[in-house]
Image (tube, rainbow, N blue to C red; front, top):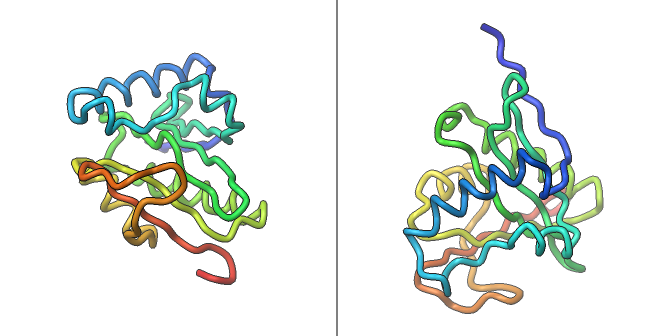
Length: 156
């Protein structure tokens, strides 16, 4: 059976995006104390103007992720792939889509924060060329957080 994979811009308050973000929250909530949960709420995603995308397999919402642009970099936000769709390379495809989206907007550096227990995500980010850095922007040193960046474009 042929798989049709699409990645489209979508509002974070669409029904599919709300469901995906809710599942992400439910997965992270028991793993990290509130002070180590740095993910934006749907309202914060909208207020910050985060470019948000949903990846679908045969029309079914399978994952999401976004990018917030700052003057000097873009930050990946709310990256998630539903468990039933993991292992299919969707996270890597979504990361590559976000890299291209950022490059088209002359963004030359991407950064992200993730939790130390997100082994699959960490492997995916490192496979995509992200490397460890210290805290950036509003983040402070948190033993449960890891910080990454990846140059894009001519600097990559």
